[in-house]
Image 1 (cartoon, helix red, strand yellow):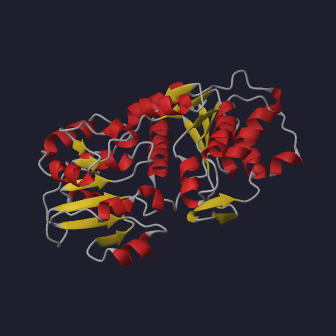
Image 2 (cartoon, helix red, strand yellow; image 1 turned 180 degrees about the vertical axis):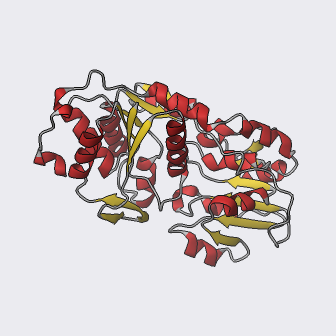
Image 3 (cartoon, one colour; image 1 turned 30 degrees about the horizontal axis):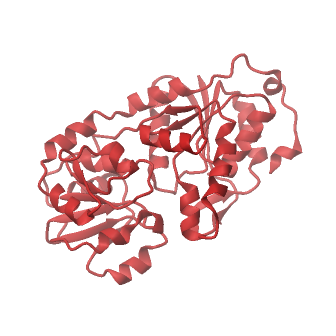
Length: 350
C-alpha cells in the first residue's frame, strides 16, 4: 500500500512518538509498503508556547494538500492533533477519505499543568471532536482504551510498541564513573514528568537524569548531587541505560513510556508508580516494582535479576507492532474522483 502518515512530532524532537514512527516507517518499507511521512521538517514553524521544543507548523494546509494529492495514498494515518494533523483531517473530510488517528499524549492534563485555569473538559472536548472523525483511533494499551472510552472517544484499536533489542542490550563494560548503585531517569525534563519525586528520594549511590527540557536548569540548580547529562541518542543512550542499576520512571501521566522497554532490554528493572503507563509495561516483582512509595519501589527493584527484564523486552518486536498498525488502517478503496482530479480550495490553506 501507499501509506501517508501525518505527524507534528518529528526530529529534532526526541520522544517516544518520534521513536515509534521511525521504527514503524522502517518496518513498513521492509514489508513492501510505500510511506510518505508528512512532518514539520522544512516548513515554517513557531515554538509552542510553554513548550519551545515542539514546533508548530504555520499555515500547513497547502503543504499537506499538495503532498496527499501527489502521493495518492491507499491509507492516511494522522498521528497528532497539531496543525499538520488538523490540516490532514480537514483534507480527508473534505474529499470523503477515511482516515485513522492515534492517541499518544495527555495534552489536556499537560496544558492544565501549565495553565491551571484551562478546564480538562475543554481539552477532552477537542479530542472527542478530532478523533471522532477517524474510522479508528489507535492506542497502546487496554488501560488507555478504557480511559478514552470513558471520555467519549470510541472506535479504539490497539497499536502496541516494540524495542530495538540489538541496540538496547546488557553491556559488561564499566561506563559511568559515579558511585553505584545508579538510579536513572531517561526522558524529557519537563513538569509533566514529575521528576522532583525522583530527585527527592533518599537513595544510595547516584541519581542520573538523561535528557533535556524546560525544567532542566531549575532542577539542576536545586539538586546538585544528581548528574544531568542532557540528551543522549543511539549508542550513547544505550550505554547509559545499560549502566543503570534501576530505571526510575516518576511520571503519572505518560500513556505508555517506551523508554521502560528500552531499559528492560538492557536488563535494567523499573521502579514506578502504579499508574497507566507502567502498569502496561512492568510485571511487578519480575521486571520492576510499582508502588505509591517510589523509594520503596526503587529499593525493591534493586534486588531483581536482569534476565527476566531482557526476556520480557525481547517479546516486543517492532515488526509485530507494525503489523498491528497495518491491520488497523482504513484503506481508501475505491479512490474518490476528488483525489484523482484535485481542485484547489483556499480554505484548506490554514
